[in-house]
Length: 277
Image 1 (cartoon, rainbow, N blue to C red):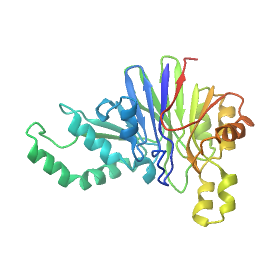
Image 2: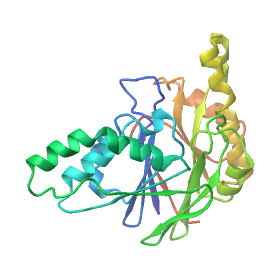
Image 3: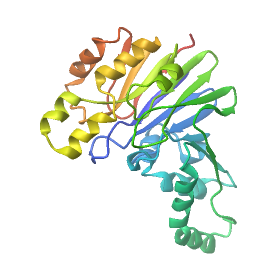
Image 4: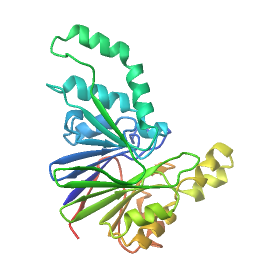
């Protein structure tokens, strides 16, 4: 079984009820963190996961809302671990440059802590692996593959497929429908897909808002992708505009017009279990 927890279901707009985009996946004894938006470690703490427990950080792309707390994940893992515990980060090309810049911004803080704590003897250890497709990580019986998605002009972007003991979950990240995601999601037990409501955004008429519509999937488009791929469960997240309590059935109904399987959505910390096929 694979367990999905929606740590953060929000967007770039600060929301008192929703953390930034991030999903926790537990498979076997591995803990995989997908993206690290605003407030990710607070949400992870709510389900008993600390930064030191993360097996790998998977980044779908380098938009600020998906990596807002990268520095916090790196620093907190470093200062709360009892020995050198390298953080493995997998992301698209450009990830190494972002990590290097993040570490550079932390240099003063790192120096302060090294000077103060005798049991901290070296700076944070981070291992970065850049990929666009294929096998990207494998450990403890858990296998992660990636494929290109389409969030242009943000490029490259990738989605991830996590497999363990016959169960499989695909995390799309931000994307419009595309062949890469179709192939990655084919036959998966669950597809976690970010979604927007174009019907609510387009009438606003502000360019910066309507621009959002041309590089994200609507609820209906995500459902079509899920149906085409033959997945068992569609999990909606990263709601734009924010999902208002009491409107869950409205969002679910829109997805159900295109997808006949199980549809999951909800607040931060919503959990979904995916059984082996």
